[in-house]
Every structure is written in structure tokens, then in C-alpha cells.
Image (cartoon, rainbow, N blue to C red; front, side):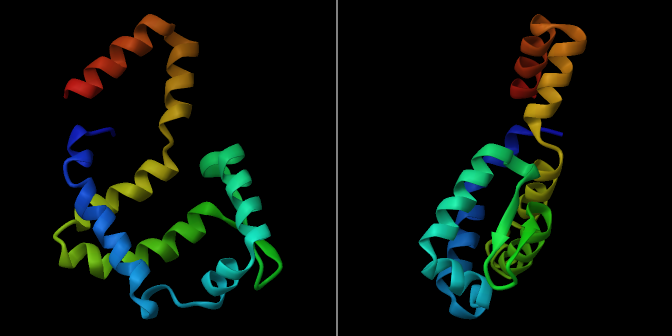
Length: 130
């Protein structure tokens, strides 16, 4: 469910991620450290993410395998949770998983295919103003 209020607290949610990124204990794992050093893996993961969006399986150089985005997302959200709670943005953090696992582009494509573009535009306008 899309809610305009998700964007009201986006700054606070962003701050929770930034707090997690600057605290070494929060994200100091071999996977993150290796990715920071392996520019080729970062470039490839960026390409995969751009191509596959939420269906992406990103490269894990430590285990020489791929990791589905939802699995990686769980680790990042767990690391960010204490910071989101401290910033009173835990509800917004909970919305992130839903946005990733229920991608809006797929919903819009299905609506346009079944009801037509005018129905899609009307739906988007109603959801935006809700």
C-alpha cells in the first residue's frame, strides 16, 4: 500500500541509515569490507541491481555466490533498526521491506494491462492524493 506519509519521514529514515553506515560496529562484516575493496564487484552489483531491480541476486565475494536482495535487505534493516528506533522512524523502516517485496512497477504494469492506461493514471492520481 502506497502512502504519501512514507516520504514525510524520509529524512529521518535516511539519517538512520547514515548512522548505521558511520558506526563501524553496525556494518563491519567481511561482506561489506570486501565490497568496499572490490570495485569490480560493486560495479557488477550496481549493474545487476539496475537490471533486475528487486529480483536482483547480488554478488557476495566472501562466499563466491549470489545473495537474493530480500535476504541482504534483512541484514541491512536489522543493522539500521536501532538507529531508526532512536530517531523515532521504526515505522518508516518497516515500510521499506514492503516496498521492496511488493514493487510498484509490477503493480502498475498489471493494472495497465488489465484496465488500460487511463485507469492506471486515475489510480496513481488517487494514491498520490490519499
